[in-house]
Length: 505
Image (cartoon, rainbow, N blue to C red):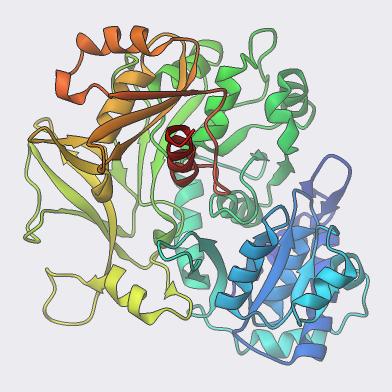
């Protein structure tokens, strides 16, 4: 069963209900289904391929959704590509994914640029008004299985080659009903979409809404630096649910968006992608104390999330939020180096099994086999397990806390140190907005990049009362803001380059 059945059911039940809207355009469920079917008819007639990638140049507008659905109805899978990406990055994605065609929802490429890729380009507005062929679509639908790919999210690769994380229809459809049930979402909800459409978080907005027959308002990116407009947009569009990246919540807290007005309809705020600084979460809780807050955890490879914690008590600025519970239909294990389970007081790598796992990395079997391995506790039959590379501490009171990446552990002055722990304490210093630590192994120095008001001496004095001397950074780089990568996470590679440049002059 394809995930597009969510759309078909919603259109049958709520044909005139607003499905998706941006700042200037909206689509009802009937309109979305019609536009998707028209686009699918063209793709089937002209491409005649199955289970192949079709790139979609995305921007923050409603036309991306019928583009995605048209690709799925054609029996293929979509690869969202950010329209703001540098040309070389786009080329790298196209080289790795080798799409059959490109659907342009952004309208920013010149004809010369399009021609340079040597691929068929389709304008989304033309697809949405093309002639429809329902028997053709029905024939393709009969061939789609739940193991077929639904989309691929391209993430950064350590070698510079993008990794295309491929999800299946089954993975999405196994997770979404559990997700909406666990947090009590309904068809009356309005999701305020923040995540770009080439970022996996956006899928929770899209497919939760389609499953429920709910609505999605796509928030303009520039509103996150315009507090009055942001709050007005949330109110005017009756937004009740936010499923945002941590960085977006931090930006809103840092600019005092709720100082004069708070969103009247907001009920639930879920966040993921990075560790949520409790100091900034407490800003949200101060202005919106009756909202339900949920800390979500899960890398792209597990299809959205595998653990969640509903914030149910007060936390000080220097505390961490627990990872919480495991979602139903998933298995999470915390494995030590010898593949045994981490007991209380021990740290282990977070490993995940279950039907929500991605199919793997597109056209990269070697990397797939390295990350998606046999569950070491099952010798009876093949069972895949994903090694996340993330570490978690199993505490004495039987809770689990994120402890950073395996590759963010350092050895300094004879001590093994988690850079994330240093970030926690620096982030709690009054006036600090964001922080990211790195290790200069050539010069044997811990480097802290941060934004905010304090100078390095104030931070050092604050740290002296919290951490051992060997954990205090030797170098501080103060920036107006910390750069974010395309996934809304702190751009550690760019920060390292900024640091190196500062050393050279």
